[in-house]
Length: 312
Image (cartoon, rainbow, N blue to C red; front, side, top):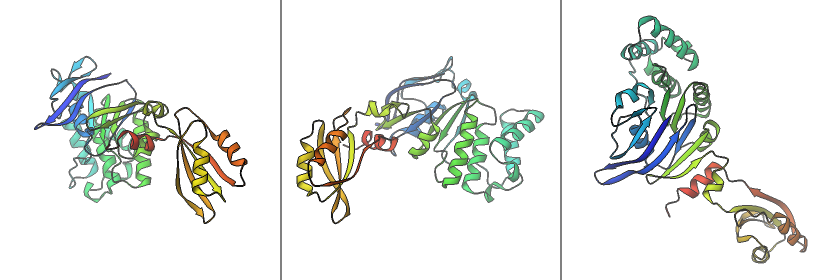
């Protein structure tokens, strides 16, 4: 449905987006992740036609952003990080105003406002001033604005930024419900939300895509080493490290702390694809040390993100 081809954006010689390619299929929820300044917002603004690409192209269905920008905009709803709301207006009046500038006739506008008030949980606050609302409720109004024309595609820039945990869950539920009928691309800094909400994530670093897949398979793409954590009692740190380093598949051993004066915690970095836990257990069993804990750490989105966006 969406094809991004060799897309770049420069600002006075600074490369914000550097020749990226990706595609989004109909009905997908795709998360765009990256540190501040990675190029996420520039990418979203080019997708919506707000910014023109320096080079490359964006195709939505049969349209090109260079030749058919207005037609593409009609297919999209866009919620920037700071929702552009008129705070002096009542929620209903504001949504009615948005419906009119979107070209909806009176009956269609009323039906659409009613449907969005239910989807976004606005029914009880339709006659409140927008300025009175909490940030979470204002974000819901912004989502209703973005969906007023019932677009096929939703572009959401940091939709949960600055919200408390309860508000984040509420916005996530709205996005999930909306995704039953729409294709959604969102940027976020909240990695747990990307894991919970998105079908797929694209990680951008310094304007380039460094990963693009579902969260379950990203660990294979990242090439991260496996890590085993163990807690040993009555084990001298240096002796324990030397013994564990001699096990096949172990690359490095580091002491990360102590549970008490007699118990240390070690992280064992292992070669990718290896699982030396059985060998570790047998090696420790040969000593008079007490093994209190032994587990292999799973690579979640946070560890993958940190590894792929390290400054070095």
